[in-house]
Image (cartoon, rainbow over all chains, first blue to last red; front, top):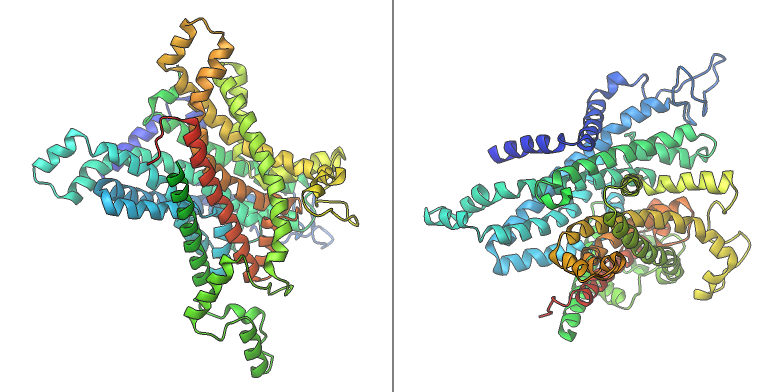
Length: 290
Length: 323
């Protein structure tokens, strides 16, 4: 726990050291705030249908003072949908990134530390999972288990741990040769104690860098699933907004409807990615360049 | 080397076998009957039983599994629930269309990405470096289906340069086989999705090459090459770039997985009749045999990519010894 706390403090210090890091982290924090307070910040209920003075449905209305980003083909406020759309992106992203980091780190730790047969078994299993095409697998899982956020997060986590398992294992292989591991062994520490008290704290930064990239990838995938029309029908996400615009064939007439969610995804994903890149300097100072 | 190749091939077979098994279990051990969508409960019980028998669903599970594996090994994916045509027949041409979009753009993206990445690393810190890194990061983060829609909006609808989608003008027939892709009309339809796929695949090798070059430039042998009096261009191309290429080879499988995921959404945006688009529409229709076959084929592509990357890695780095 203390290692995690130290890592988080170090993370904040490193990332806020450069202007790029500060801006990127700021965007992430802003999105998190939007996600938490969406019901209070959104001007309207995202599913509410709006009518003009004559009682006619406001279909694909141009942006106006009342509807900053216009309305959808069903007369719903695009801006409110945009604000609500941060929620699934952040939720799915964080749960999947955290889940796959925990699974991946543990598999990497066990395989790297115990070596031999268990290493071989775990790594061959990881290799098999490496061969699974990610998006097609998620689509299959959703078609079997139903199109809800739970199945989506489960399907993504089941695959996404593979990258961090490999990287953590490689790190553990070199860490276990270090003198402090031998020292712990002499004091009579058990294998599990050495693994989780001595070695695990050292891989936290590495796992966190990987988590940032997993987060970026998870947000993109959540959007892709929404765009393909396989998203949870009760949840408004940025991907599903683009899907609605695409499916109603109105997207080419209403750029204010289809452009904002794409920009939002681009902004959030590149912010997360840049935070990861900034933090990566902790484990590989050479990346800082001259 | 031969032993290594055989080992990798054997592992490929095992991987695909495991995935085929998982697919079998997913679709058959489900709560609820996967055939409910095809076999209407309004039919006479005898008719229902006859239909189930025609799909081989009246046999015990282990026998179904055995039949399934034997069929898969012969590339027989059964019949579509929706069109009742053999799945293998539906998929063949689709696979070719997907590859026509995927492979040329992947090769081009790797070559161009490695060159640009190496060049901007060489001139690190300059304005070109900054612009390229910002653009590549933004483009890599933008959802590719959205980039595709924006490209259609601008290039097809505004400038009227390219058709809005599909592989050929409606009413025309495509020639069978590879000759079909050399048709001017098909190439015209291919151009825009190709550009979008290319730009999507370009960013990753570009940024990776830049990082890899930055760490290579610090090595002693670069100083040595300079001291020998070689021109900057020679030092960059012959010495630095060659060594910096290694991480690009190891990450090829990752990029291929990324490319397969991208092709699913790109094909949907451009109504490109490929594997991904077929899979999406098959899921919408609960056409499980088609979904399953599409998944296994994309798994085959991914695994094949890993295999090629392993071989490439050995060719690029003579220090690697195959045991």
